[in-house]
View 1 (cartoon, one colour):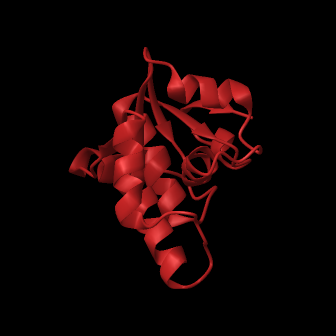
View 2 (view 1 turned 90 degrees about the vertical axis):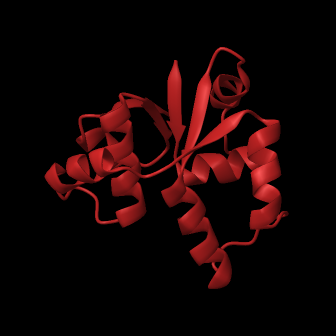
View 3 (view 1 turned 60 degrees about the vertical axis):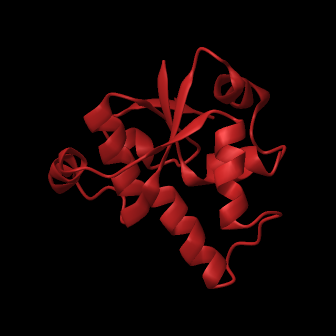
Length: 128
């Protein structure tokens, strides 16, 4: 199965944070899972780090190694994603989350998120 992980899921996974349920961690670590992270996630994390709103135990440069080590692929933005984004209702105002939702819909991936606003959209979800 193909999964797209939301920003906080990536942060909790990479920081080995106990807020990430074992069930979700197992999905991400399962060799049969194809796990992706959006370019929007890396962009959001970089912005928050530069503003001092996000502190991590690693740098953005080191994040690339973490992704590679865990078999998590980077999902680049495409015009297909933006086309879906244009048609999304405004249930959620966060532009990063909206792009992640659009990518999940466009690619038919299951999005893993803890965001309570995601179920308002027609995207496959794995929530907790």
